[in-house]
Amino acid sequence: MLLTRLARPVTLPPMATLTDVLQGVMTADPSGGWLQRVYQQLEGVHWGALRNPGTITSGPDTRTVELVDGPMTLPCVIETDTLMVAFEDARDGALPTGTAADPRRHHVSRAIEALRTLAQARARAQGLETDPLFGIIVVGGDDVPEPHRTTILEGLPHIEREQAEDLYANYWGRIGAEALLPFLPSSAATAISRHATTRK
Image 1 (cartoon, rainbow, N blue to C red):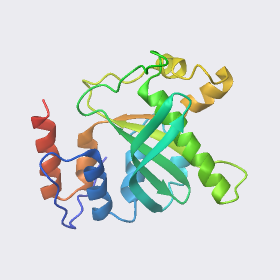
Image 2 (image 1 turned 135 degrees about the vertical axis):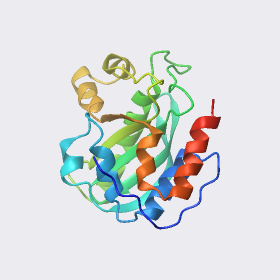
Image 3 (image 1 turned 90 degrees about the horizontal axis):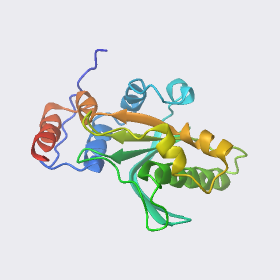
Image 4 (image 1 turned 180 degrees about the vertical axis):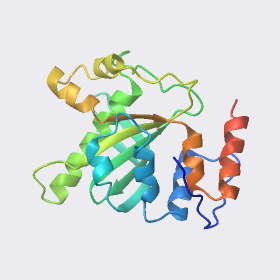
């Protein structure tokens, strides 16, 4: 798929955080067209995100949610008028499994649960009867193992199996950091590439 490089200047530090990367992408393309093109690269993305990704209204923001086993911080939450998406940074290695309370609790399991809580809060604040669509996307290379379905489900032991299966559908998959480069001007893309080569 041919992607057009945007011309609006963006400068990122050499060791760009994922928040910096996403902020750079949003500055270069504030309309949010990049978000739908990211979704198109994910096999597990919900069809509703492809059909109606919406207009970005906030983010990338850091959100902390209290779960049954302690606080969970989502570093990069982006909201549109139709959905919520959280990006998790696995560029430096696999996301962790296990908490003090449960060694099976995978990071993505907790992230899905935390984002669901935020989606429910948004629905209540807007007087909606249904929660907005929401999903987790992991940013990491092929060298980082993607969490298996069973791993994510085992990380939701306190939730009924049927509901846990529904929650698993909110894991939309993994993309490489390089997948974000076409949406950035050359100066910002170079900074991110430098991060990818120096992190090891």
